[in-house]
Length: 208
Image (cartoon, rainbow, N blue to C red):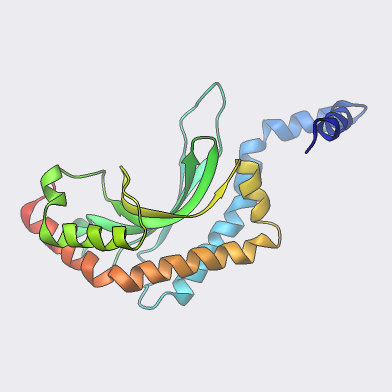
């Protein structure tokens, strides 16, 4: 939007009877963002359950995690879908699959990856043969290393949370859902046995 166009828009929003409504919208911005984004996230959740081979209905869950207050503003919420393989008990989940939406500087990113339960483990865990092999394989497939994520891949990046939300209510939505679902299904199908083996080895030696 050009400066001239933005000026006209601001004049319209702050002029006449519009300003009281705009102020009410600003007070409810967090709830509005969540209401707009939640249907997209639920569609993704149900789509993954229906289309991912071997993905059971119960271990996947949807969570909303609030971001810390920064620069005097409460930001939007980041979102995660988590998946644990049904062959392992809850206490043995060291690595698990995730679809995420989070901040990257001023931008918002959607992606998939493998995350550490309870945060990254001691360095010696990374040196276990099954973990090292899994990491090397994912790196060769274009996944990056992270702090919370063992390996992750960005699917789409947006300049702002507003751009992200707009994409979930426009014609981009189905394409975005398809990209994320295909990436997640590919990740699970490609690495599931390796992840199970890595988790079993980590449990034997301990995380710390």
